[in-house]
Image (cartoon, rainbow, N blue to C red; front, side):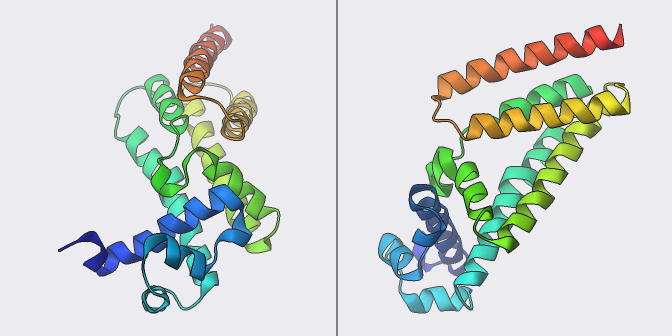
Length: 194
């Protein structure tokens, strides 16, 4: 049985191709006919999985939330180690580039541009941003930072992540920056706690 013959994989193929088109041409390029050509599936296949384009776009945001937030948090929490190691793991995981299957390195930026054009997307992006910042805040509290400092640092860390995702950096540059940031943060946190 090939991947294309599995009903669930067809839905995933539509979503993945949606991300690929989004990353290259923005939200206006995410069109049923373009995706159909890209993945070699019929419009009938699309309507088997989705009522309309809006439902596809909603599914894309759900997948982004699942892969870019919930799955990352689960992986970090699976560490079962101290919060310093969890923060380090979080920074490592979030600075990895998404695979080309889901649009590659410009997915995060493209979703944010989409949020500037769609009230619904903007609302979901804001919810996800709040969830991500709250998780970083939680880790910093676990490191016994004062709540006000933890809130400030959580915002700084998260906004640095967003900044990195919006730049055209190589994997090596991202890795170097992530390592420097991790070391700097751990040093600053230990100084505050001393």
